[in-house]
Length: 358
Ligand SMILES: [Zn+2]
Image 1 (cartoon, rainbow, N blue to C red):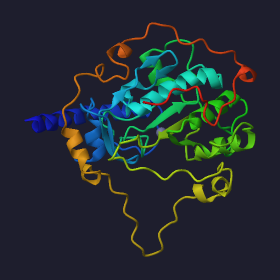
Image 2 (spheres, rainbow, N blue to C red; image 1 turned 60 degrees about the vertical axis):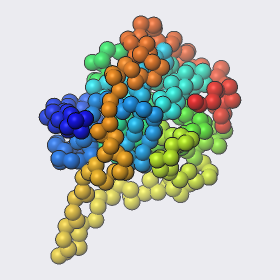
Image 3 (cartoon, helix red, strand yellow; image 1 turned 180 degrees about the horizontal axis):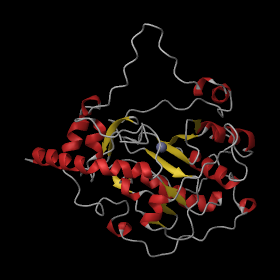
Image 4 (cartoon, rainbow, N blue to C red; image 1 turned 90 degrees about the vertical axis):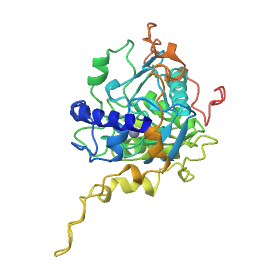
């Protein structure tokens, strides 16, 4: 009986999703867009589920091919964060990821002179592939944080949908950070995020990585965690390791030793990564477009995750409990003085007064 209900729910939700895709495109999303999902496609099925499963949190599979159980939601508001693009329903993650975001937001005030973070996509309620915007973010261990600071007020839901992304790059130059937009506080926020031992990698635009290589004068131990990647010029993408005991989670190899300010970065400043795909040889068959990922392509457990019972409500599954989910009435943290860098402590390898992650 539960199976039948889940099927019906997904069918109904699919019908309403066509409109939602258009809305997210209008909100300035980028990436592989698709008008309608194929029946049985993983993104169609996982995109249609509105609540996480009950039970313990488990990432299942790999960052770019998996799903999750027991996700919790980042509260839409905290003293030092605001969640963005609420209509996408992608505030869900492994509790370790949500805890890290909250901690980063608080430490950012203290260590980076950053008044609070704007949090973009984390994952869908049960993870899995998405309609647009990301190849990864599938197991609750990836999250996007804007390079735009949190304003000193609570934005309305509408403002959170429509606030434009601000690129850190110069528009009239190739792969160059705009010195009018980039600040030391952004550099500090990145290195702070990289300082947490559970953070595996942070994806940033190659121009931002280069800027960090050229200008970061503090401890460079964790600079290698900043990985150059396409896009990522208006937000950075934090990936954490498989949490201890997550047996179904497929880890990614650690980043190579060193600061990464080497040949691997220089490659991004050659034509190779930007060249259009080579045309097929005359007479050769044109290559097939990549096949859409189906639920059956994901780890076996993910089909059961789709059909598992939901938590009672979004509030019940919000990190920090239902009270954290209710509208926040307190004012945001006061922004530190704009030029407070000199007064801030060094960004560690690991600032040592941080509590251990649960
Ligand atoms: Zn991302």
